Image (cartoon, rainbow, N blue to C red; front, side, top):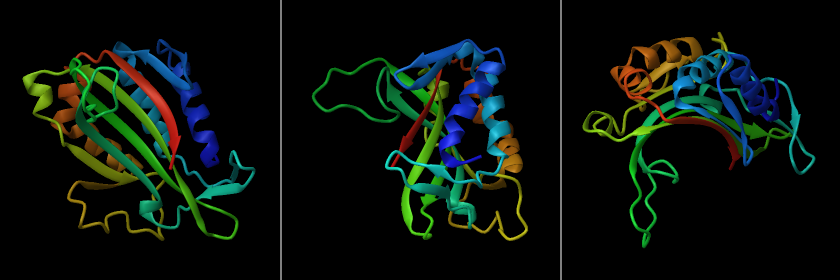
Length: 202
């Protein structure tokens, strides 16, 4: 799987679960009641290596750096937001919208060209929006980090002491996410309203 294949394959996998979802403005958007199905698809794909080349919009061959654990990161985060806005972002001068809690599962891929030079970063984000309550708002700032793909002998997935919430390779990361009290409080008991799958590059 190449870095430019990740979004389409995950979108297809989510739809294949039977989740109620459709395309909207280049995103996959689905019903909150199916957020756990979307998570199961994300979790399964997170363990697959992104080790084949792709061609980007400029016609360049790109591949995921993948030479170190931080070249393919997995991030579970919870942030406060406003309905219709980006997670955790409040627009200055605009009337405040309805407060929501945004739960995000991100796969962050550093990209390199054939010459090994860094040329950008791909972000695949499964976002889940739920109403803000005193319980869910108190979870803002929670994060669990790991690295994508299968465990590799040449990478010490636990060599990030600067990240206190580092959980290792994809399978152990997913287990740590599901064991975190914030996961049950949001995706299970928090009554998600919608989920979206987006891809962006930096």
